[in-house]
Figure 1 (cartoon, one colour):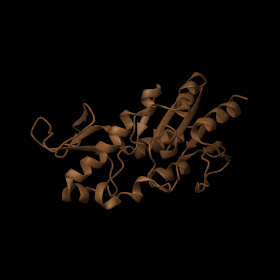
Figure 2: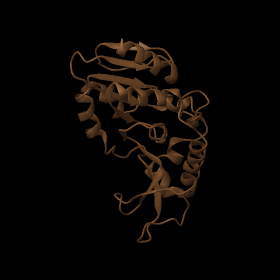
Figure 3: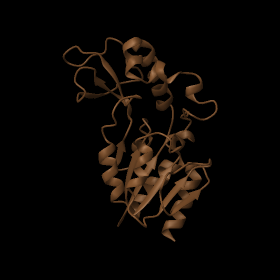
Figure 4: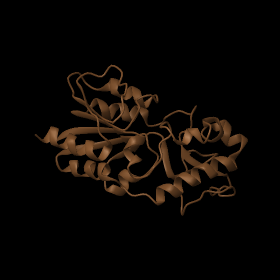
Length: 227
């Protein structure tokens, strides 16, 4: 079986009712990045940061995987599918995808503010001030904030190097270092991009654009590559 590597962004989950950040009416129009998504914001007002992510978690728990997520699961019948996602939701896993690498963290997990390797599942919908690890250190969202390193980016680059197909879904290709992953595609490897909007894709070769939303686009991609 050939290797299909899939890079997903916010547009992947939009059809599940998960609001994007950069679209018109998106979350960044309601919140400033510096207030809720940076280490400085956490130090300044952890209560506000927790409230922001509790709202996002509440939305996620009320959402379900869409046709795009399910279509990627179906592709596992024909390819070794590796998903690399910029999303912090767990809709790929809930749909049934076998291999998912999260670049920007996971909304339903927390981690210790003192020991970053201590990662915990969040029970329920809220993470609160006073929720601590076993040594009494406050838990924070297990999210990669702006200004923080992306721990899984090197692993992601190695996976992209092994791709026989690269499929990009629902991402602006403006957020680095994730947007730079396309530069690790081997020469002559086809790259497909599913998004209804115009998208910059850097120096990638052999790019085929599928101007559809995720659900229809994944179905169309499956038709193309399966002949």
